[in-house]
Image (cartoon, rainbow, N blue to C red; front, top):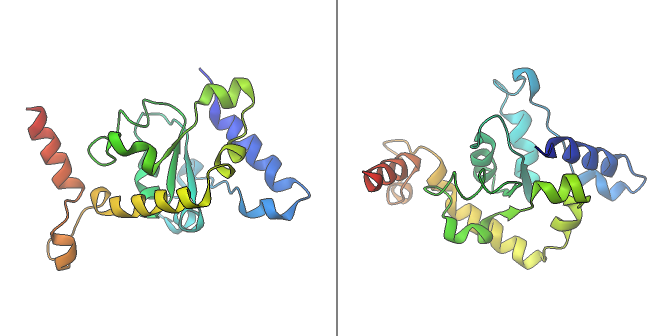
Length: 172
């Protein structure tokens, strides 16, 4: 099993410790170990709000709350395995449009073949990044829970609960 988290941390630490100060804004590690972010969402949301891409390495389970947090922050999710990408978020992140709203980098390429994540992301044209972020912003209503008496504009859009109910009914 490739350990992509170690590769991500190593690449980010090397990028931010390089003599080139422009790297300082390219990569930020948010350490939420030991539950430190549990009661402090600002700790992980602030960096997401200013980032174009939010890395989504596999966790203990195939789905990640961080993916939904990234979408709410307008940050393009970057996945490293197919299972944690297309297969898990079909109701909220349409599989047919996955390339329009996320990036997939195979973890094997990063861990075993030395592919640099920053290089891959920096090669994406700015216009495409802008369109991807716009698409992510359009998906925001599908990943949060709308308050019952929310604004009229939100009432017309399906929220996460609506999509989960629709998806369950379709399966039945």
